[in-house]
Image (cartoon, rainbow, N blue to C red; front, top):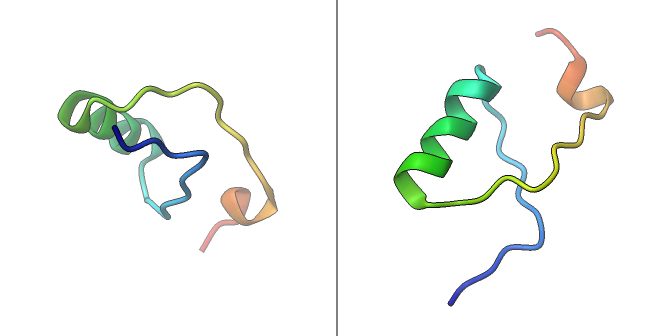
Length: 42
């Protein structure tokens, strides 16, 4: 089985993207980290 330590993918809608990865790929969210790059508006 393949396991990820962490994954960073730039998205425009965090909740919708997270739900898709959980529902479609069966991924499990353990922790969400926010950093300055995540919080900047474009």
